[in-house]
Image (cartoon, rainbow, N blue to C red; front, side):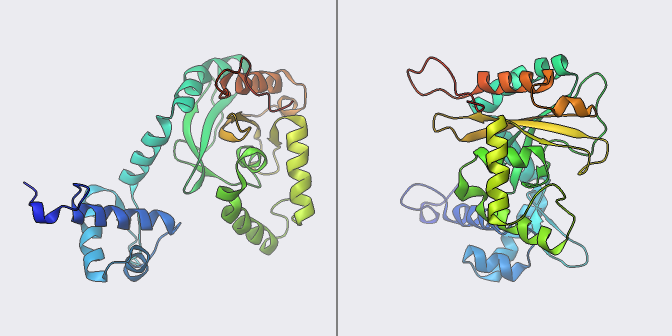
Length: 272
């Protein structure tokens, strides 16, 4: 039984509120962190943070690296996050129809949403002849060198992606040749977005993952912003060409899944 002195004005449990605040602080750090870093981010003494982390480790919500001793979110936290993301109505609706799209195109399909770690895969659908790839549920995809990421870059609200975009640009500048098909200047990023928006889908060829090609389209809301991105992955380079049967199927699928303005009769078309 919870003692009344341990509850706050809202009826919540103070210790639990503090523990959940520390878990949220860990999510905001975007990577493994030391005990002192986590305590500082959560605004609690290190001794208290250590007790909370011990409970998180036992529950699988956190994990600790052997050599560095740093803490990060564990598989239990990933499962909770994916479950929450996957229960959004627009994800569930698209997921129900995804097997049909994959069967029609012969390509592996995925649905991604923008989470705290970036573009995160929340649904995965293989075909009878599955594409060999290490991607799966929970995989986070880059903004600049994945079709999924480029669709988010083009149609997602700017604020949530700004930080990740800056990090990826810095990495690419430090590693010449990482993005062979684009200019990393502000003008180059504008040109990438403009080109993707004009054709109504994003695509990458085998230069990023040898042997694999991908096309991606947004599921738009009534503000014409991406709430999710649907991606098809395969090996046939002709499938990613504008006007291909696969591109047309993907665009029709995304249009059907778009979120309507109340009272609107037709969904948004990202290619319009």
